[in-house]
Length: 264
Ligand code: NAP
Ligand code: GCO
Image (cartoon, rainbow, N blue to C red; front, side):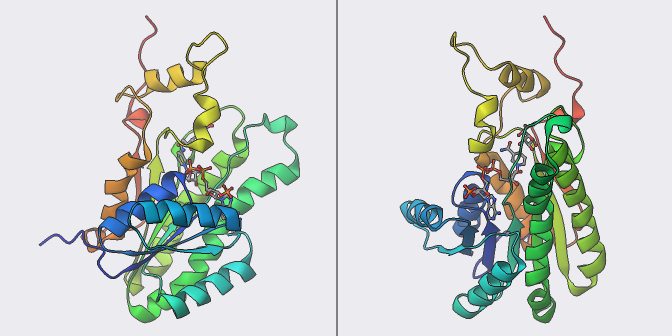
């Protein structure tokens, strides 16, 4: 019997007040998981709690910056005390800066690496010891098309997401013997606040050139939605994927397989 249930499991999704993280946490809750999430501002945690409540989900939210090992360790200790050991971790929190590399400051580059790569390291390091004691655990890192491809202006993000792909494989390699599975989800281009600038209508009401470009590059001929990621995430969070480890599951509508539609 294939088991996709998450009944009674504690799922921590970082940066999950809205966007992809919120969608994944909602999917986990519908499979029976207890949801805990964090954001860097109380007002966003409160906004997230209200949004979960509107979905009938009694989540618990914590103010925590994933780049702070002190804040992360305190949050995980509080979760273990108030809710239970984290069974499922989704390293979702992330930012992007779209700046030509030679114009990007070292501080801007470091900030993206800190949140998108150091953050998943810090949070994974905080939850793995209890997963080892429990004899099982699931870690899902939210990678990207930029784990495989580059493009203008996203050097820091691509470096971070490429590193996150290899961190995923290394956690799988180092902790697989403790029945911990660490996999990645590589979303394609998803309609969330993070990509809103790439979809903004032009002054004349026409589509953003990047919007048209992505639709032409995607066999599905559309942007993805956070809902498209729910099923793959439930699979990787459930017992159904216990023999899947170190894998990056691309959920991209086919972009990585496709040369792109020939211009008419
Ligand atoms: P989003 O809408 O910008 O949401 C990102 C979330 O991360 C926000 O809740 C944000 O909180 C939080 N966050 C940022 N820095 C944080 C920190 N230091 N500590 C804790 N939380 C922090 O992004 P999204 O589109 O949902 O993307 C979520 C993840 O998917 C990211 O890792 C992104 O790189 C990845 N991804 C997105 C796409 C896409 O097309 N949208 C595709 C592939 C991968 P604040 O609002 O307080 O900043
Ligand atoms: C960009 C986009 C992408 C998406 C995503 C694609 O500027 O190219 O923001 O990076 O966020 O990572 O998988």
